[in-house]
Amino acid sequence: MQNTGIQNLNHLDLNSGNKLKAIESPDNKKSSTKQLQQKSWMINLFFKCPVIGTCLSLEEQKKVLKKTGYCTKNLSAFKIHQILVESLENENDISSRVDTYLNKKFHREVFKYLLIDESDFLKEWRNHFGKGLIEGIFWVAATRSDLSTSAICSIFGDIHMQMHLNSEQNRKDRHLLTYQQEENRKLTQRLKEVNQINRRIKKEKERIEKELVDLKRINLSLGKEKNHLEKELSEWRKEKAVQALEAENCQLKEKIEKLSGVIKDYQQNLKLLENQNNKLLSKFDSQKEIKGNLRKKSENVIKCCHNLNQYDGKDTSLELNNKHILIVGGITKLEGFYRKLIEEKGGIFEYHDGYMNGGSNGLENKIRRADVVLCPVNCNSHNACSMVKRFSKKYERPVNMLTNSSLSSISQSLFEYQKSVII
Image 1: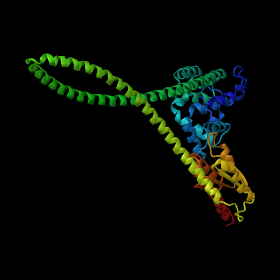
Image 2 (image 1 turned 30 degrees about the vertical axis):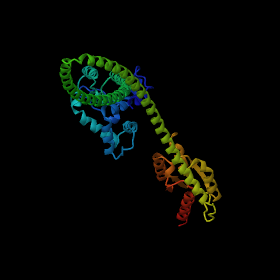
Image 3 (image 1 turned 180 degrees about the horizontal axis):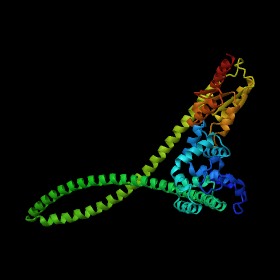
Image 4 (image 1 turned 135 degrees about the horizontal axis):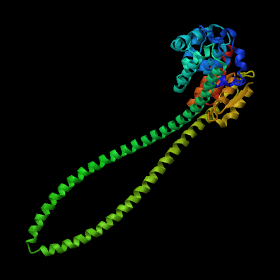
């Protein structure tokens, strides 16, 4: 907003000072005894835009306008700024309130800097400008009537270039903010994924801990069994049959090794079969879902065909008299039947498929032209139905949300519309 106001003053020759001298009044020259403060509508033309943008926040600008009877609710920030800047062309209720408000807001700066010498004032200006604290002292600079042309040019140049620098910094800040928001989104997604992994790890840990407890219990039982067997073995070795038993034990070990190999092969085959089974189950679920969708579509088409067979098209009492009838959604393959029904009854047929992928402008334009709108809810998305209701209300068009898209439902709705128009 501030840059716009400055750009409109590019025609001023700040180096020559000719325009500045044309604005100054002899009555405003510095006297030897005191200095006078100008009113807001008397300040130099090129100071008016930056004074409003720098010395008043957007909320303060709204506050001033509200006190003069303006409703700022639907006004853009630029429009508010424009009204205030234009008010400074002469004395009026708005410019007077601006003058009073800024003098009250910056009364300390006015008291401190209004009457000091120009050289001291410029030192204070540069000091404040370097710190970025220019609002109050800039108001004093704009309203002082005794500043020289060179001082005014210097102050205006500082303000003008600062606006450009601020604009560049704002663009960088917005770019950085967009980048940081995207990084934050990525980090949030990554955190979500990590949390999911942690939950899976926690469940797996709990499962392993449970298995460990079971294994410890089994190990304890096996230890007892081992001790028992060792005791029995010790007793058997004392007997003469120990050699035979050892031979038998060797045979059993060989048999166990063979069986272990067989078991390992069975386990591998079992794993392969389980993988195949999972794939078949997944394929079965997909086929089941496809079958369910096909059944629903078939039932819908059969129902519509049944309703189509019930409708004989001989409702001679229906007269549409060139009314624009808009049908939103329905079954696309029945569009020709919809058109025939409406045009044979003297109506003008309009159709929209109900899809919102290309935006809502097409639907809105059709509803604006229509005399009555029919919307089967069983063939439209919730978003499409909401759009139909909103645009119909906006353009005050009668709308009927039908439970199905059959010709009999369309015909019955048109009868009801015709009766309401006649009544």
